Amino acid sequence: MKNNPFTEKGVALGKKIFYDKRISSDRSVSCSSCHQPEAAFADKNKAISLGVQAREGSRNSPPIQNMAFQGQFMWDGASDHLELMPMIPITADVEMNAEFANIIAMMKSDLDYVKLFSEAFDNQQINTENVLKSLAQFMGLMISANSRFDKFRRGENGGKLTSDELSGYVLFQKKCASCHATDLFTDHSFRNNGMPINPKYNDFGRYRVTEREGDKFKFKVPSLRNVEYTAPYGHDGRFATLEDVVEHYRSGVVKTPNLDPLLQQSNYLGISFTETEKKQLIAFLKTLSDKAFINDKRFWESEQH
Image (cartoon, rainbow, N blue to C red; front, side, top):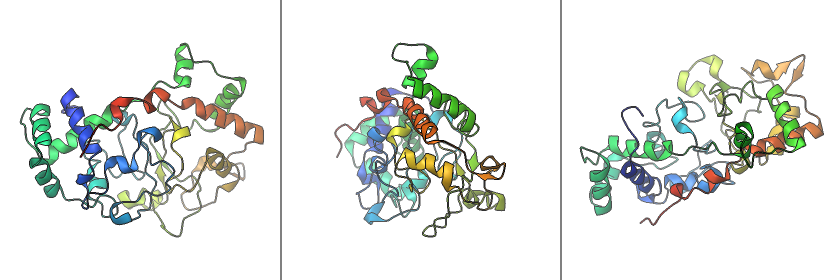
């Protein structure tokens, strides 16, 4: 974002584009169709999002939060630049199936867009670069760092954790933080977490980008911030609840090619949890919920066409 500083007008333009269904080829799908604010900008209760003409892809829509601090995007890391990332869903035939020439033509015929572009950018140009820059500004502003756990670590009011939550935190540090590291609760790596291969999609994950055999079935480690709001879970949305996710690590890990070494230690596949520990871990994960972020009206839809 070095050459794309945040501006009030740039963010306003990005917001308008984010919520505009006219971006898609049949004017039925906007960015917000698959990224809703109440779900931390994931797709609430949908395993696989539907694009234009109800076309189905193969992956769960990830949340949009703290993107400005990440270096790779999408489940397979197909984009390494926030300003370029929206090109993938906008042009993918199973998502918005759009052509930028048509998007630009639509915007040039809309007086609201003409005004916003002229205010947002010095060159006043309605072009692909400025469309992507404004979307990056809007998404880059979506910062979540005010959960109860954040307040706990900062010693602020409202940051008290229960004994179960504290026990869950200890468990998390011991059994989960190797991958879900840093303040973003992800180490930004790509790993195979032992999910049985879904024959419907046969998704090779990171291999799609690198074409390296060692990357087959590896997917980006997701952030756990606001995880309470972002169900369903997994790259194909196969887990309906957090309980299902933890149970997968406890009893459902399958030895597939490139399974992460951390999930196959001491002749045990997965991570050992008791029922009590499972409940404590989930209690901790829910302390990562940032209600201020979810309810931040700056990111909610205003009147659109």
